[in-house]
Length: 621
Image (cartoon, rainbow, N blue to C red; front, side, top):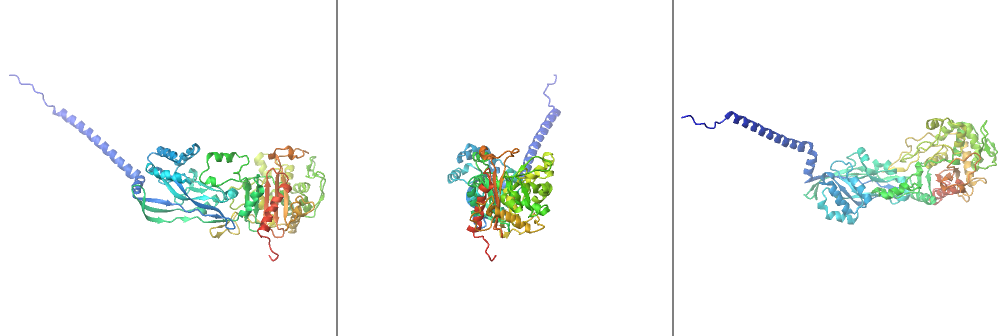
């Protein structure tokens, strides 16, 4: 019988299949194990800070304690910048599960306008330190706080925190001098000390608030607290108290500042008043002004655009950034330049036929009085504001010496110690014109500088500082806005103070002062009407600055011009002459003649300081 055929077992093939399957299973196990290990490494190493913080936050949380910003007072103790309690809306992005959905809920709950929504969302995505709260909204209303409290369970990572908010009681008149604080932006955040500014949402943006930011801000503290599952604080585990910012005492006088604004009466212009012997800035007014409180919490788009597009430029600080031709207010300084360079003496006279002509030039540079003032010396040239005298003197000096001597009074340079954003003005020179226009300097341009026209442009602060230095007979005191930081007064000698100005014959100062005094008290003085009834000796100089150049032999007629093309009115003054206590510079844009439209403003300022405030020196002083 043939053998029965059975299905034979292929052991070798089965072994191969088993090995393949075992190897595949091993690969899968290794892959899954590697994935698990990689995930553990990622969570425990790469994301350690994030998840350890989340874990610890379930029980222990470290909260920054922002410092209290220092207060700002005027010279008489009047509060200019304070801190008022308010409620802010903050968000820690790392604790928010769905950012877009959370933002939508917040927008609905807070009932924000369309213009505010974009800014709100932008702030929520602004670069921030990890686990530090981002400020979304300030100064919440009670209704908004209530709505957020009811919906707190739907808004993880969102908190309402109590904080002090900057407030300016005299915002409108002090806006340019004080400046304001505002939200810290992404660019500022890059350069800030993260420890010092932990929990802080505001920083000085302009003015005094920005210049003294480090002193006003202080140092942040922190506290460690234990919380429950809902984030409610159960107890405090430890604390490092914040160091409050230092209070600041300014040289400004609120009454004088208010008076300056009242005198300008909304017109475009500026008044700066300085104490010559100390450099204290008593008033730094620029009109029109604005409400700086609107910038603290973030001004709305429509209001900001309205301020930017306002033709009168209320955001522009004319006192320190406005550059104006000086007109005849430059003449006392040109007279001092001539005395210092020895090209003229106080008694030297010229004959004024009503014009000046350069050698070998037929063009006539005219005096404002067409038929001239006849025989004129230095004292009379100032009293009647004779142009011909200063054409001649400027020509004798030349632009090089004129530029050097005017620069000694601070013209063409920043003069303030703590005046944030100050312009350097423009004191022209040969080098400046070559660099700016690639042209040579012409003798006729020197004559224009000699009467405060042409390229010469100064700020009201520079003009007031030069006037204070003149009142001091050349002794330089750098102007400043702060008198004390905390309990520490500013040093008497501030860094960068220019050298004093000396005359070969000191009696030359008396000649210049006498001429300026006769501007107000002399029978020919250009501002003699303003000088009537003076109870003290006052020296001044009027100026009328052209906005555009007139053609040869062309006459100026204000009634035929648009208002913004009319002359600027200027006046500088100091008083009392024998012991100056105040120096003032006034400019009113497009107002006309300085003796008519600016002189009385300067007198009102000196009257207020010397008479109303009782600063007149006694006979025993």
